[in-house]
Length: 70
Length: 134
Image (cartoon, rainbow over all chains, first blue to last red; front, side, top):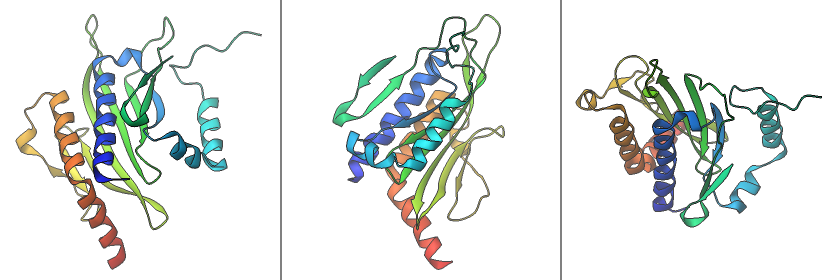
């Protein structure tokens, strides 16, 4: 990745944080974001990372939608 | 859920919180810039009754995978009552950024963005050099 592309991703990350700062009620309390091309994301999602994501998803965060009642 | 297209296939996702959800005071995000580079953001909001929540404190950490391990490289933080920067290749001691102290919090965030966007290659390179010397 070029330095200019990396700078662009840093700008995008801070743009996201600015949006959270402006409207915090619209954003989840915790999240993992990938500012990467789809091909890069695919290579990042190894089994271990998939396990971590599943673990994160399993936790009940305040912003999680209520689970359907049985 | 809405997906906002970004230039060069960059995307992020807005998740609209469910009706009736009460926003918590703290938010934490891990933002992967690449397989090697990541920004961790911790945000804390003031919630005065009858007012919109306001970003009060933050810690932004840039980390990189170097020699097979994730290393913190630089952090911008005002959680301890003053804005400071930690350059982890030197020391964990915080260095106050007094010149920026009076800026409103959104402007502080922008100052951190400018510093990181401008200097990240040097910061990362200095961390790599420090690890080689160890």
